[in-house]
Image (cartoon, rainbow, N blue to C red; front, side, top):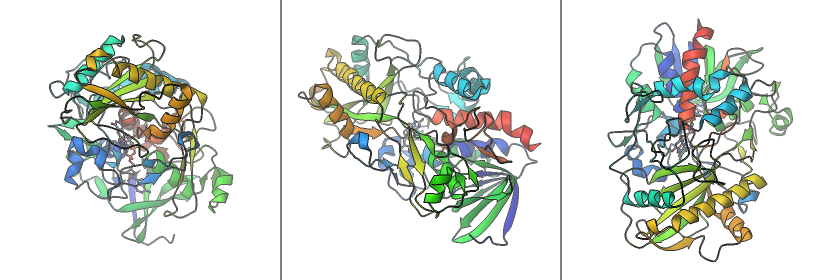
Length: 519
Ligand code: FAD
């Protein structure tokens, strides 16, 4: 792309105003001596539906969604899965389901082992988890109350259906937990939600809006990063497109926050990625980085174990999916250790595109899934241009581990769904249906029923080994002055939704790693 004369130079350039980008722009611009730019392909969040928690499932596909799609997935009956991602200020935090779940202590112990850094262990991340939140349940060793992000533990608004689901869970031995973010994860609890006054609180609303007037902070919307600007081994900014015009935006430090898909795509368009794949996509290779785009993984949910309701299911006062339940498939009464499966009660019927959806209010769902899938896929380019669609292959259900646990998770969902505590709600099981019992039938149902839990991660993993894309300090290997801080650096997915972990990574980078490189 030709570079125009209009050159702007900043101290820090944050590429992507999503969940992580909003944290970094707000935290780094606290220093009045720094000129910070935040660049975003989309515009501001103007759709009023974004604020309404119950509307989240209906935001996908709107003008501010990147509307990604996977390749046909062999493990899911050759289905193509829609992957919404936010293309606006606030990024995917404007589309997400607002559940705030840190993960289990063991999830982060594995990050510590992979990076050789205590910073990424649970104890290392705990100050960031506390610093980011304003927890409705009060201050404690585990919880903070002064952060930008309201984390609300709902009480009175919980659906009566979900209360019966909890009673059914207790009937099969699942213990009460009460809070996903208190250090332990196994047991029954309401979902903590990022809500303020009953409205969605995106990362932009929590972090960015209060600081937009800072003189040192420049927010550039409708600015699409095509490639990194590279001078020898230095990343010195981006080549972007603003209103159809090329623009070079340069900075002392460039921080990539374009997300688990956007960041590796930006690297690969810049010639940084697996050499043979770049060649196939007609991109000249600047640095052979074999793991850029690799290690793509995601959580799946089986949608669902659906029951026709005996009486109308009241509308959720929250976001429909009010309670995720983490447990051990071998022993649901166990409270310690990292869970291997998850269940979730939803006040709506949830089905994949392969099944007929009952009317809202006439049915309810128990979702089930695998917390630590071992299937690993890959993201790659199909061509050099920003308009060339990426090839997104998460290799869903490609391991026996994932298929076996998905079946066990569904069996536990049915076990909870069949308890007497739910009999006042349950008329009959609609899906998978009473005839679906054998392992083969269950596998076939799961392949047609699974949907994404919307948690793709891992495509620029951090690690202490030379093949990892970023170092434990989140520096892009092989180049100076470039860091990656978003869901792409997560080396292995935590047990639950990943937003809390993404924010904690960004908080940790801003507090512990960026200052020494900027001084
Ligand atoms: P994003 O927030 O996606 O930000 C990336 C930003 O970079 C975007 O604003 C994008 O427009 C911008 N960008 C990308 N490419 C370019 C480019 N070339 N030039 C300029 N800008 C660019 N997680 C939870 O914990 N709980 C949930 O309940 C939950 N539900 C979800 C439901 C949905 C429908 C979705 C989509 C996600 C959900 N998630 C949930 C996941 C969570 O929202 C994401 O993991 C998280 O927001 C990722 O943050 P990020 O900063 O890595 O990327």
